[in-house]
Amino acid sequence: MFAVSLSMVVSAVAILFFLIFFFKSIHMIGQTEVGVVSKRLGKKITNDNPIAFNGEAGYQAVLLMPGLRFKLWPIFVVEKHPWPQVPAGEIGVVIAQVGLPIPIGYKSAVYKPEFGSFTNLSSFVKNGGQKGVQRPVLTPGTLAPIHPVGFLVITKKRVYGIPVAEEYSGHGKGGLKPETFGLTADDLMVTQISPVPRSQIHEHYTEEVARIRIPQTGGEIDMVGVVTVLDGPPLPSGYIAGRLGGFEDIEKMEEDYNSRVNGEENIDEAIDPKNVELTEEELYDA
Image 1: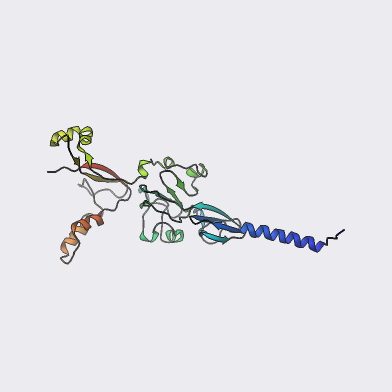
Image 2: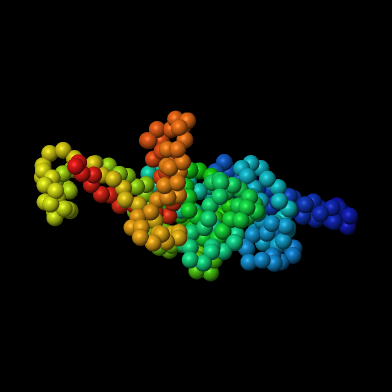
């Protein structure tokens, strides 16, 4: 019989363990996936953020991007997550789970240009990003590698990310819905302002239509969008409506005789919808 030496057994066991460690440390990240790295050994995170930025144990700030990646098992565990994708005609609401607290009296976090599309978690935290609902939304067609622990992204049919807050973590993976965050399907659709048939105007606005004597049939009525801001400081005393920046930018442009910006471009620059409620109203001819 073939005699098996102790050294051969030890070598075989060592090779087996090496192969186990090696294959468990190799991760293939898909083209529209990110790998969330969780470290099992290390110092405890000292602040109340759920992500480690300095090598502590827990979720790591740096994601694994698409491709063949290596993270030594069992010190690190990798979990794959899809990139948030916003379908055409919809928007994505972003909720940050890291950062500073939102100031008292506000419902949403302050946005800075440095945050971009929320794809750089370290930059978000470094530049004073705040937890909670973010004012910009992800536009239709967005497909971005956003950190699943740093941010939750809410779309009409899916919530992307790993919930860590107590009020959300109990729902488990895949258990979150827009309704969990107080949103409806209509809230996550792009608002469209378009002409409405005169007959529909008469159906919903009988008293107003009768007062200004709009014909009941034929053609359409142009609509405008009335924006109601749900966040921010109150209006100055005596004002019944507000405007971002007041009228200082318009006054400055009127004083600048060298300006070549026309009125239409002015309006485009003035409108920046963030955390607003938009309603349609008919546009009457005088």
